[in-house]
Structures are given as C-alpha cells and as structure tokens.
Image (cartoon, rainbow over all chains, first blue to last red; front, side):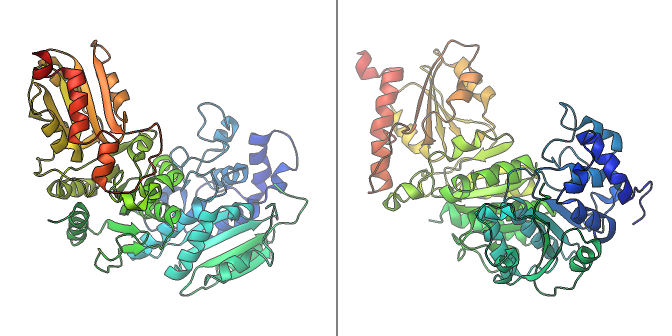
Length: 231
Length: 299
C-alpha cells in the first residue's frame, strides 16, 4: 500500500494544532490517537486511492466525539489535505465536531450519536462475508458508549454469527459513570468474542492485539487509557 | 387469498434467485415466512441492531430489505432509521406489516398510525402504500431494483380489486364538485362513500413523493377546489403537501385518518376501529356530504 507524501507520527502535534491552536499538549491527551495511528499506519489494508475499493479494510469510528485525532491521522496519511484542518468546524468545512462520511474522504461512517457504529459494523462484516470478501471491519467505541443498549444487541449478535473478520476496539478511559465491574472485555467474552486487553498507549501491544488470529469468532481489543489523561 | 406479506416474501425470494445484491434482515417477525437462506438474517428481538445491520449491509454493497411489525420497524429504532440510513446516505427497503391497527386485540403497542408522519420528518424516503396484494409484487420489485430509500407499508386491509401500480395518483372516478384522494386500502371505502357524490376520486399507492401535479390537474378539472384526503394512518399526514400543492389556488382541504386527539384504549376488530376513527363508509360518507353536499341535501 504505497502512499505518496505519507507523514509520520512526528507530524501529528503540528496537524493537531491546526485545529486546536497552540495548546501544546492537547494532542497527547487524545485517548484515541495511538489506536488510530497504529491502525492506519500498520494494520488497515486501505489507502487514499482505494477508499471505494470493495475489498478494502473498513474502519468505523463510532465514538465520533472529539474527532481531532481522527482528522489528524487522516491528514497525516493523505486522505485529506492538511490545509483542510485549518477550516475545522467552519460553515463550509468538511470537518465538524462529528465526522460526516458524505463530506470527508476516507471516512466510512458519520457518527456523533453513540451506539450506532457497532451494529453498523456487524452488518458491514456480515455483508462482506456474504459476498465472499476477506476484508476486515474495525470499529472503535468508547467505554462510556457501551452504556447504549444497541451495542449489547450487536455484541451478542456478532458472537452468534461468528463474525471472524470483525474487530471492535474499545478505548477504555474509565469514563462511564456507572462503569463495568469485572472489566469491559467480560461483556464480549460471554458472548463468544476473543478478547485482549492492552495498554492503549503501547503501539507494539496494540499492533500485536489487532493482528492476532481469532478464527470463527469476533475480536475485541480493550485499549486502556490511564485516568487523569482523559479526553 | 394471498396476503400482502406472502406476496412480499415470494417476490423478495424470487428476486434473490438472480440478484445477489439482495439480503433480508428480520427480528423474529416473519422468520418462518422466509425459506432458510444465508442472505435472510434473523437478528432476534433486536430492532436497533436490525436497522443498523441493514445499514451495514448497504455499506458493504448489498441491497438490504429490513422487515418487521410497523411499530418495531419505524418507532422503536427511529434514530437508527434517521441516522444509519438517512444521515449515512445509504439506500434500503424497509417493509412493515400491521398497518395502523390490523390486529387491534394486541392494543396500542402493536399500532403504528404515525409511521408515515415520522418518515415525513426525514428527507429522501419514497413511501408506498399498496391497497391490494397484487400491487405488492411490482412495488417490491421496483424497490429492489433501485438504490435509494423506500418504505413499503403492508396491511391486512385491502380493496376488492387491484389497480395498475404507477408513480402518481390514478383517477378512478371523475366528478365536478371536488377531489377525494384515497390512499391504499382506503379506496373501496371511499368509492362506496362517494357513490352518490359528484366528485373525482384519485387513488394513491405512492404517497411520497406526493403527486402534487396530479392533484393540481384534478382540482383544475373540477368546479371547486375542494379536497378531501382519506388516509389509513394518522389524520392529516399528507395535509401539508396537499396545501403546498394548492398554495396558489383558493381551496378547502379536509383530512380523514386515524385520530390524533386521544389514544383509543379499545380492542375488538379493525372494523370497530375504522368506525371509531370515522374511517368506515358511514364516517367517510358523512364527511363527503359535509364537504361536497349531497343530492338529497340540496333538494
């Protein structure tokens, strides 16, 4: 997957600042940044010139709130021009506080309302399987987003359907008010998912978790982010 | 007599034999009506997931058919209908059964008179309301061939005979005193209730888009711009579109449909409910007399 003018991780702070101004460390606090980077840099079989390829891997950002890290990664990887970041949330900008798939190249779903991405990802993975395609579907949700009951409909269903090309990434910064006693992964495990809980800042650990085999069943990777650096 | 649902299932299965794009998502309802097929997926009693999965199938390149009882297709997962199909700008075919009150013994939970009004809050939906099982086949085939968003409202209520399925309104009778628009299964009731009235009767199976040009033409041919809408769902659902169509014409508009003013806590038969909502022949005929006059009243 050759991508011209591919930027590196070192470019992320500058790309972030085009949206957030000069607050120096805001980029580092984004809970989703490391997950997004590892996925787009090393895992997803997709590139800016293949956003309509039916065999591309899909990445669905369900937790659409706080999309700066997503936009920064898309800019770093060539899906959107970095200058677009300067227009963020302006009237005629394609980039809003929640991503819109109709407006942004490479964005697979429009999100913002919580609890929609995982059921859509189940349908996407199912549809790809029905068509005999090997593409994988990744969906990113937050731990607090799991409050929404629609996720639990989808978690049970994906387990029963044995969707082995589906990966859910739960970015867990313990932001849910009522929490998940015993851990987030348990909710998936009892429904037949393979589970892996890793440090959400550790690129090697994330890469290893994302690329593990999970024959016959879906995979959840719980990416834990330390309290105190919530975003 | 084959029901609308049976025709729907038979048609979808027939199209699936040669169109690999088509896949069906169910939530228990009608699970036994379909022949087992890997492209017919029953998600269990999970209506939010049902609609989300349908949208995901569309994202993957398939043409999803999402089907269950009307309140559980449109009302319970309404935000999924709004966002997962509309906001994502995806196509799909949503097919309900149960109508406004096909089985009133089940009570309010199984009644969805507001479904078409809800679709009116969302852009880009075609809404089709067949009035006879023979009209269901062409409507379903057309929906499966297209790529956009279609809602098909099936019911156990039906007219005695089918009409050719067309996009706009069909003139079933022509008169001079005004125009009555009958939607789907309301046609036979309207024809009976207007038997002695000198009015044009238009029959509609496609209600969105609303055939404004057809209504305008019918109004122009009549002596008076008086229009009565008779719809099998919430009263006045199409009133705003009729009013818009006639914005440049001084006109009178009245709407019949399922009453909005109170919840009817009663069981009984669908015919009992027709009567309670003035949607039986007596009720519609009384409204016709008030609006268009009657030979006996004029004498």
